[in-house]
Length: 330
Image 1 (tube, rainbow, N blue to C red):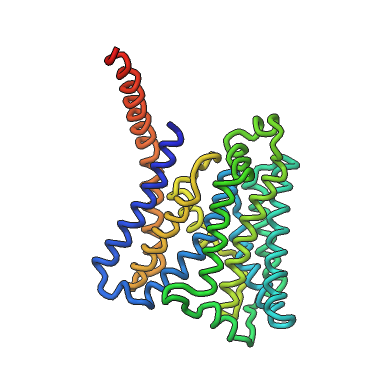
Image 2: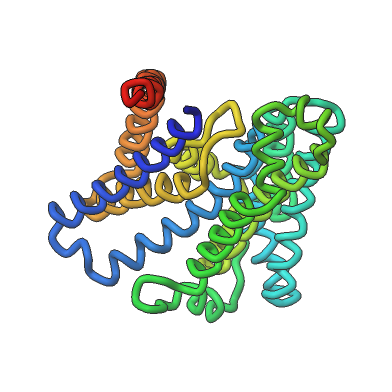
């Protein structure tokens, strides 16, 4: 019954995303022009990447607030080091720093049994402060605009090298969590970490692994985004964190851990991207986009309990019917 309910949540997210896209196309002349679809692909791919990384942590029953600090920090490091030592070096260093932040989050959460919310609040503050320290509080820029132009160069009209990297990593994580022992361990830990530990599952390595994935994905998104702009700015990106959380919850990832599918998270990210894209197309302010996204999240949360009860009743009826059928035949 539990699997049925969470599968329905995934399909609801996918259905809502499709309906939103059809409404946008039907009510907005020129919505399907290549320039607008390209912008939609750019925003969707980045949000899906970060949201799926965060969802991996949520499936393990934990949470990662630090990505709000990791995203801008990665961009600052990539731009600053890229300017002096080469873009490839800048990207590698940025991703390594982000992976270390994730490893620290996972280790402290596992080794000292500190709630991940508390741990990642600390690393959020630390990474934000590190960004100001690295730059002296100033915006950093780089003179090489060619790489950024290449990152956003259209591929097949609606993609770009940046969005292709993001989507490839998202698909890789989706396959990893759905078809490997690592994914099974993540769900087992999210369902009951004590039972997973007693069963001999590598809870420590798995927790560290999901936090590394979350921070690394946020680091890739932040560094590529900053390089495409040839500029980075210190501070926390709380807006993007909220979008990623919203996409994960809309997509059917349980706040208690252990339940949900990343394909639903991808659908949630696409839904939010379509809403943001069409509202921006009509000239709506950023506050309006955030308001609509917040309302959608609240509606999903309010409907969760009634939907759960409805699915339970339907499953019970089907079970009773299957039990009665052999008796009727006899």
